Image (tube, rainbow, N blue to C red; front, side, top):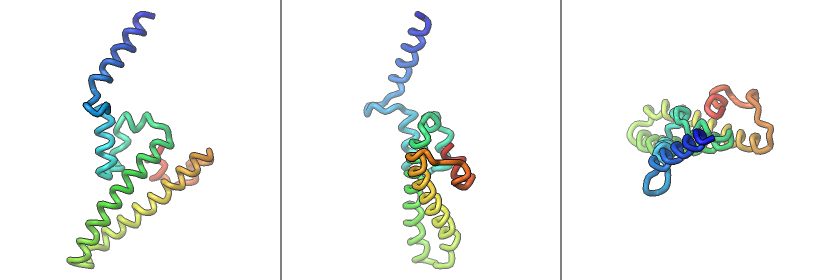
Length: 130
């Protein structure tokens, strides 16, 4: 019993030591940076992301995809302004991200209703949120 309490106290202390001035843990801050950077492919490597509920994962993934979409849209307009033909590859990526964004929103609705099934979404999307 005492060993369990000491382990809990140690884990609480180490968690508190990881927190920055804003009260967020370093791990959570790193995850937030990845989301803001639009690095949706890298979110699964974070323990904090994997500990979230499926709904939390969907929301985080949607935020990351939306951020990435915004970044690439800005780049696309700059690129097309200079050379329209070079924007084709980027346009395909934008279409892919918009489709992912739509699927993630639909997954959020299905998850809320308890109707989200693996067969309802493309395997790439399921891999990101499961």
